[in-house]
Amino acid sequence: MRATTTFAILAAVCLQAGWMAASAAASEAKEPDCPVCHNVLTKFTETLTKEDKKDIVTIEEKFQKFCDKKANDGSKDSKFCYYTTGASSLKREISKPIQSGFPMAAICKKLGKRDTAICELQYRKTYTHDLTKLTEPEITKMKLKDLRIILQEYNKECVGCLEKSDFVTTILKVKAELPAPKAEL
Image (cartoon, rainbow, N blue to C red; front, side):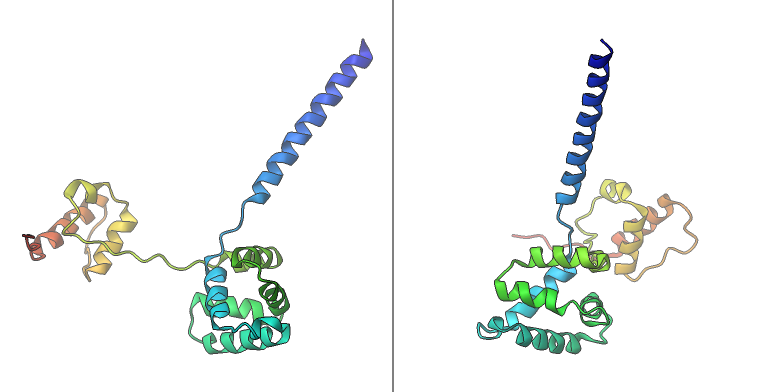
């Protein structure tokens, strides 16, 4: 009787460990989203000819030149280039897969495992709000951060605004000042 109880406990522990390993594998299977990496490498490979893609050294030299052009522009692309061509050069990890024809997502995933900062690079979101199309209830439901962005887009300030309702009131005043949209025929 005691042996069966021990066996049942051991089986339950093994089963639970199996579930934990499966859930860990599933979480690792999610591909890291690396938009800057994907964008830069796509732009770079578009500059390469078929002949260039045959030689690893040529790919590395062209990548260095490509990154040198982006060097001091302060963009996320230049930061990506800094990470990949700097002291811990990852040019070989880029050139070999490009030569072999790997997709950009796979190359970026591999680079992200080598240096997590590569996949942490994100482009800044751009907002464009058309106040003429937004209704009052839609404006009221927006987050305070979005309300501030709308005011920035229209070069307006909300002086003395402490609560969300103050921002909504200011935006509604800005909306009222805008010319009415032309009616389509």
